[in-house]
Amino acid sequence: MRKNPTASELAILRVLWARGPSTVREVHDGLNSEKPTGYTTTLKLLQIMADKDLVRRDEKQRAHIYQARIPREKTQSQLVRNLVDTVFGGSASRLVMHALSSKKASAEELSEIRRALDDMEGKSK
Image (cartoon, rainbow, N blue to C red; front, side, top):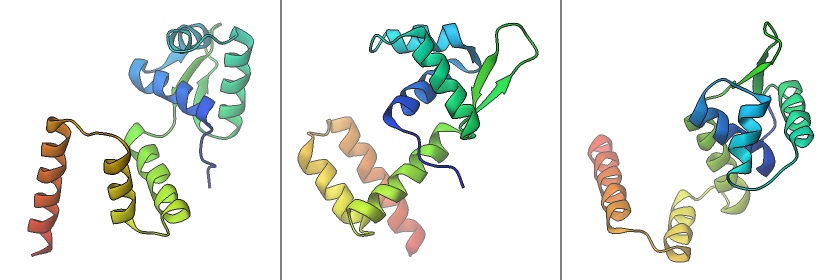
């Protein structure tokens, strides 16, 4: 079973999910737009992530190409499940209530949440 990605690894995964398969230089440039980091640090993290099976490395070309192994949605679901279990004692409602009370949601986000709840209620009837 794969380990959860660290915060630095998630930053790299966000770049790969947005850009698609990328060289170390492209990932590095994507990371630097958010927070300056060293090229060798980016390279080392990608090597570690390949060992952890978080990314796939294509070595056919001179510049290796890295690609996220797991889709964004699946990674997010796994992280949320772990968060609900470890921090909120398995209670999804406690997670949602905490999230809504700690950061103001926009009208659009609240509308999206209402639609999702209505859909879930409709499926359970």
